[in-house]
Image (cartoon, rainbow, N blue to C red):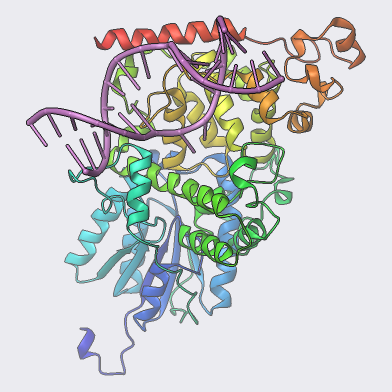
Length: 494
DNA sequence: TTTTGAGTTGTTCGA
DNA sequence: GTCGAACAACTCAAA
């Protein structure tokens, strides 16, 4: 009917379906909808149904709640309205399109198999019904299918992937937010934000999290700007990022997860800071490479959608990781392994919804190599407790540490939790912050309390096995055991 | 087709 | 204390 509109009849509204892109700036789907000149309906659907239960972990829900509140504010500031729904995604979207008589629908792409299948099915249906359905790229610098090796296949090693990404030239500049949103005169969403029950209660374990996270678009931008200021986080990033007590990490991961910021905005702002000469180029390059690791993880997830639950390297199916939720597993979850650096990390996670990257590697190595527990259990725990729990990063990184992932570390690379602790938390600031019961130990013994003389322990008010656990496993025994297990994987193949 | 160089984040041991 | 070598062999990507 488009061209036959006689002017009396209003243009059919356009829908923007928000998912992992909870921002109004640099949002291609929103821009495209505004460009139609139609009135715009902004919607978010909290998925419901058995197959979608895993869409958000508990910690992510807290972040999601605030990100949605922030998005609703931004949208209404532009003259529009965010409508919330709860239900089966396909059914809800179909019914919104029908009831609003929408002429078009826009969204930014997502990359899990479930998400892609859902989107493809809906797009096909709408197109057949004469409704414009358009997906856009907003969450990745490059679509996973656009970067190919010379053979036309996907990349399975990071370095060539990075070189390819760079050879494609600079990413596009971020899009500005729309001048205004012409709100469609249609009925409101079916639920309120509070109806979605995303916040924890009884107990509210996230009561202090507002001190750590400003979980919305403004918070993301402020965090990025602060990080990129001369003398702040990115200055010394390439070395400092390994020290969990330092502020040399961006903490933008949950914002990327929910799209309160886009990788285009991060890339462009980093280049801008670099051009101003504020920061050493080695540091900015290292930071952009980390952003590219996220791209690489999505590249893998797109081409190997099973990596969320299945070993990328099938030989590891024979490894024999334990999969029951044993006492050892629970001790790891709670941060009671007896290794201070591991316990500090697990408690940081529990208390703040975040864990420093270096420490993530240490605790993941400890679970999969020292305790021989399956990375899937670790991945699930992280998924439920991390605010930045990300479909691609979480799976790809766990597999990388476990040794079964793409471009994984050589099998003999088993982190020594004591050496790592001494090297990256030499003054014990990080450990003392999260494991206060051993804070009075001198630096010398903080990393391995079981080696401290009895009088040093009692002076620090520690009774091993009572006030703080004895180590669950002895490092060199655990190392030998892990090496033997890897040896088995190797032989089983021959 | 074959060849070649390279591969995020480490540990241990012995000189 | 510091340093270099060994720890395996394989797969990937590109020439």
